[in-house]
Length: 78
Length: 336
Image (tube, rainbow over all chains, first blue to last red):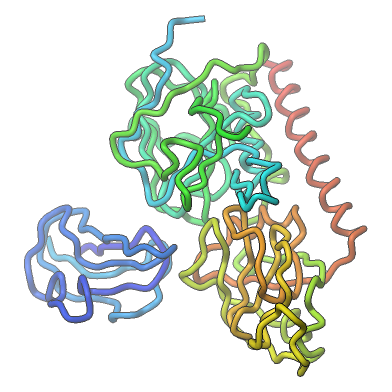
């Protein structure tokens, strides 16, 4: 099992906008390069992308959580 | 000297990477802030390491470093925030003169401390000079590379402004001369210009609180969270407006700390508005703007009141430290 980390600090969101569905739900399979969350910092929303493919088993953060650089965002099963 | 293509390819722009130099001085009164490298010490040392004249333009990244592909022989150095750096996948030291050749790719892993790495390339980034500087001011899109942060696929022109006697490849800056990157950043601060607008108790809170850097922290300013200010009752003077945080408009010193709503003070930095009508309770001394530049969202900062003499001594100390770096690099060259 590996994790997807954020490279930037800020506030994390799991959906593109409050009214929309999340980018990914727990248990879904994702592709390398796929966006799984947004991190708001410096007045921008920046995409957090998966650095490899796999099944996203669990999110380790909630919508609106503050995150730090290299913090684990989600668990991934190869 | 070999023939040069004279450019570097931006394979990945990172999060917010801009071309910066010592800044665009002289236009503050017209509303144009200086921009320029936020951590000037790290920026200057990066230039020294690659044999550039002082003031050559370099790259300032924020949180996520760029990926750069070289198209000719250059020296490159990474300073500032800590991050693992590789050339063609092989780790290379930071704070060191590194040789690269055409086709070499420099990349960053995630930052381990600090917020802003600096990347200097021998010859300097030779974007056009605008109003006396190559610094980028992204808010109005002037200077730097097309007035904006770097994007994937950009090709940056490189110059030939190199000193005759550059540091040897492998020259390094000893740890004792590098900046600390602490979890709590101490910011020496001169109290004023409008601290009379807030209560004594609020000023005590100001200097005793560990303030948290919010997500709204960039080259324009750092918004902080952790305490609140109460204002002294008054009859607003003509032109000040009725909001207790308002004063008659004044020029904001670089590094000044304003308190718009009484909570969440904002430290105004290199790309900030130059004047306005918010009470400013203090000014971070110029030397410590280097320190706040390496504080990141989620980090904590503290304000320590100092007098002008201490501020000037701090500035002299930083200058002396830079000269020690310059001398150490020359001595390493002489030994080689």
